[in-house]
Image (cartoon, rainbow, N blue to C red):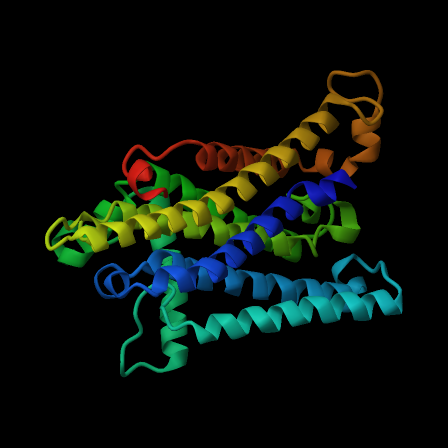
Length: 336
């Protein structure tokens, strides 16, 4: 049972904690006319929307997994009818609330929509740009040739490819997204990776892997913004005492919100890795170090797909590293 709580609980707690913190502090920081006029904190607002969307989609997946568990658990009917109704209703209500907040906020997720574009085209463009920027971060370059790059393209390359931290966050986000899809499309035993929860819970637990992918993308985007030389935080002109005070409040809010996200990801990944290490060592009746065949008898699915299991462990190790190390650029001043 420990594996079922090791990663999902810290990640889910951190997401709701960050949402609650932003909800309770946004009004206080937004009441300042100076802040709203000269330095609007779009980073935390955009992160707030992304987290709400991630929670909504994860909740919808969990609601469906609760209501129709045989389709998600290789034919096992896991819950009684009252529990199905209660769990599905709770997850569905969470999804509705998160979607309501998501659509209520007007800040674009990736790029500002064009005035002439339809909602559908803007949504497709948003998803396309998110994937493209993730790939830029992972490889550290722009897919266009230098001859055809615009000034914005060159700026994006400096932002995305120039940040070592952003590349690591992007790799984590892409890896988690892949491990979200893997259990859904794969047969047993590959479907049990990365959660190692067996046939019954591995596919429903993909909701938390997806939520973690959204959270690491938020950290990647925040790192990109810190490396943007056109960021308003770098402009030292026309500053007064009120402006500096308001910026300090915004930076403190950002620091707390993103620290919550990093702490949740680091804690969940660390617990996940510790439990996997104990299983491999052989605390459940034997393994690679302790005598016995418990590793092969209790966890046959993990042993049957060693490459996928090792890849998952490497990814969680990278998440632990990148969420606990300090940014060499602006983390001291901006708290991101």
